[in-house]
Length: 199
Image 1 (cartoon, rainbow, N blue to C red):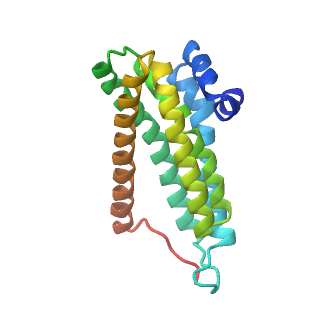
Image 2: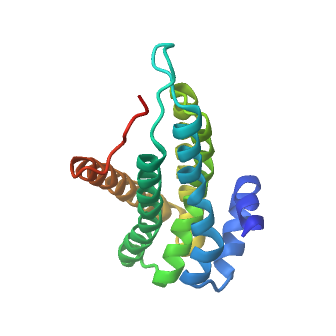
Image 3: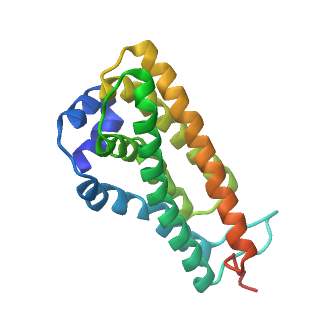
């Protein structure tokens, strides 16, 4: 797993070809990649929100209670796990439009590796500062989009022009999934599973 993560950052084009050539199962992918990397933002946010806190306007740091932050971290962790599977399902469903015939497993593997920069960017949660979060988040989203546009034509074995359209469709679906996760967060907060601040 680690050599693929490193390869996606150092030589993504070549790494996508290597990943495509491997026979990977969904269970193995989740056990060796997704479960570990999805924990990075959840654990980082937990540590940052309970131990460091964030300051608004130079005042006292605002922190969350450990119990409420643990609930939010667990929910966000499961949302990330589900998000990878949902994106893989959408990629598999859309592949028919572009004359690609990947298996559902291959699509979930592709979605998992494409999300790697977002998972690693979650380290910014250790020090919850607005500008740091925006900077790291923007860089992670940009590199994820780059991996998507570079990797999809190679991984699906389709022409570059079709790969561009396919990647744009996947990116649009990804944004819809993100908005859905945010909406679910608001609903769960309304049900009483929300942040509780340290007073």
